[in-house]
Length: 164
Image (cartoon, rainbow, N blue to C red; front, side, top):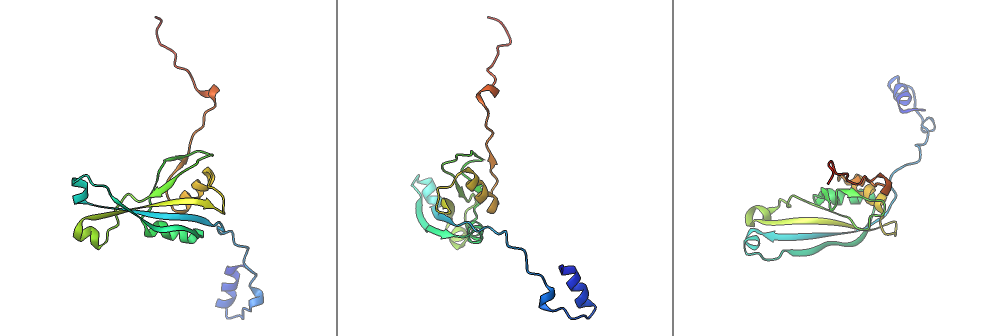
C-alpha cells in the first residue's frame, strides 16, 4: 500500500497494521568505500611577508570511509574546488581543496589561515579512474566537467587566409 493510502486510512480512523505497509524498495544508496587523506596547510600574514614556507599537516591519514562520511568531511573542511576543471576518462590524479581559509579563533585573532586538501587514494580498493573522480566531485558538490576529446581527424589544421 502506498504512503498516501496509508495516511488516508489513518486519517479516517481506520486501523493500519504493519502488514498493510509494504516493505521498502531496496536502497540504491552509494555503497562504495573511499580511501582518503586530508591535509592542512597553515600560514600567517607574517610568513607571507617574510616569504617563509607554510606548515603542512596530516589531518586524516588514509582512512577508509563511506559516501556519507566523505560528504561530511568535504563540508567540515570547506572543500569546494578540484585541482583540475576537467576530467579525462583515464585521469591519474585529482584532488579537491578549500579556497577559503577556515574561519576559526586563530584566523580572527592571529591572522593564521588554514586551507585543506582532500585526496582520494582508492575507491573500493582500486586506484580511482576518471569516472570515480567525477562521482566523488558530484557527491561533494564540486564542479568538474568531462574533458572534450577530439579525434585527430576532427582537428583542423590552420589554413592561411592569403598566399605567399
